[in-house]
Length: 226
Image 1: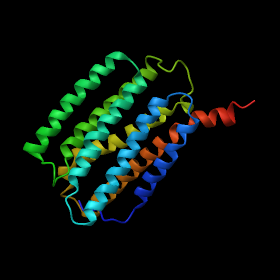
Image 2: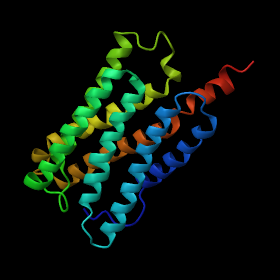
Image 3: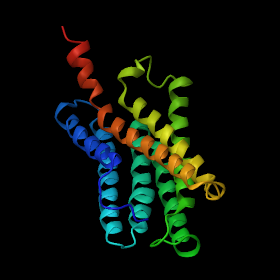
């Protein structure tokens, strides 16, 4: 997975998301824990990309960086983000059980199926993506059926925008890697285009993560001002 050292548009978006994500630390009055967890996701994404590109440009195996940073750590932190959003005790048990089962699978896949050092674990992407999609669907269910937000405007709810773009990206990711065995036999240009679309969605997801928790500040500053 030699991605080269040159910073692409995707990497600039990641860095921009990181910079923007710093501002809510100074403006945010509520949902601080949610923001800290989400900022960790952005930081992990940027760090993983930077180290992966550095290793790849020098001809060093870098798949393990993406396996551990993106597939394992980032998945668990995103789960924890949902835990902070829902704020209910029984979700914590589900979270802990999920970490244990996911860790067992990750170790099993690393030693017996796809490996850890030289191969990007597409099987783990499928499981990770599906788990996050289910979390997103539960979030939407809680809003639509259980009236979880108590009639609040979705426009100014940071978690709503974050979950929407998590859903968009991980649904695309699931479809891409679940059909990868079929796609690999198609034209390389088509695979490149699909991969570029997936990376674009990833960049948008990180950008929304950086911007979302500025919404309460803008609401109070420009829309609720006396």
